[in-house]
Image (cartoon, rainbow, N blue to C red; front, side, top):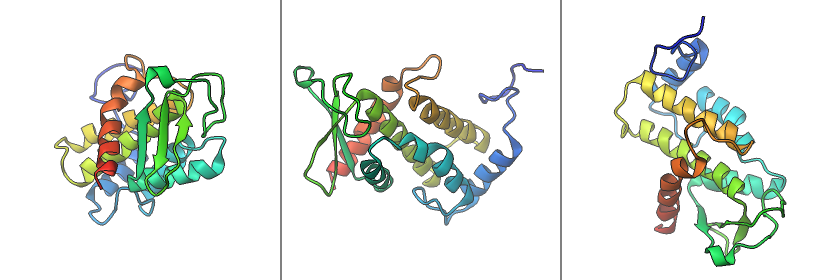
Length: 190
């Protein structure tokens, strides 16, 4: 049966044993780095959630964005409303909506116009990396079960953002605005 209980978003509050075990091993492995896909759990996250979320029509730029996000060396800025125009999104090639943001790789001088959807996909991956770095650095003081469900929520948002959808009760811009600003400011202050 279905039903309630539990702290997580799972059907019965019980995490899938294999996934939860992998997460616990990653949490306990002090040598595992955040952006690295060397640990089996992070490799799985990269292959199933991160890479698909950051894979756009422009494959070359997508690879550069993935690398920049992992290195925290990507800047994103909102365009002023009066500058929003129908432009081709540098990542997905769409020209149907105004590009609302621009981005650049820290080591480049070139700004790329991007759509709100592309921005949201990048921002949620930044949120994911920030949260797991907080776990890794012991900044987040929650039990392993709560940490696991928070990671699962971020994974779900990554998946849904690829389809331009939000989790029920959330809007993509409200949940990812703060960390994107933080990531951008951190990269800019280097």
